[in-house]
View 1 (tube, rainbow, N blue to C red):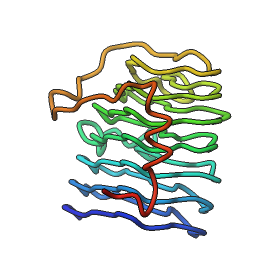
View 2: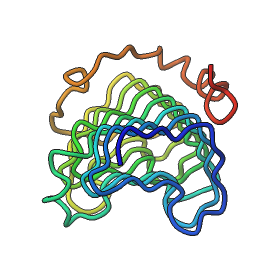
View 3: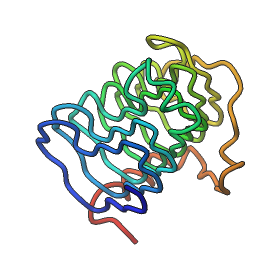
Length: 205
């Protein structure tokens, strides 16, 4: 699967993953959706998939939010792939996997709004390399970590707002996303207002 756009849809009550991208799929855009209340992951990306953007989605009322790389033992299939960008998503009271990352590099997480994530925001594991920048974390116990569970990853956290939130637990160096594409960060202080106004369905434009 490649060159696919999943946009402006509402997902409720899935009996497995709401969106599952796998088996070397590439060039996928998941944008402006509303996802909650599923059985497993809301947006899971795995098994050698790459070049995927997850943007302007509102995720809520769910625990296992987004997984990137399904298993610690899948290095042969995933290493060098799972290059994914997450930007301007609203992680709204979703306790964990916002996302949980294995093997991918660079995984770019920028200008997202996190509120009341009681376990973790971004968990970067199993050799992954994550750049987490310009996000707004509000009442998040552990906004960014590379030592959450299992083998550790590498992460760089910079220019994030930490409002009533813990400190990032990050170490190591990571490929810069700017080697793959150009981007401009929003001022992280404006991210909460921007994302809550514009993320989700019916807000494209």
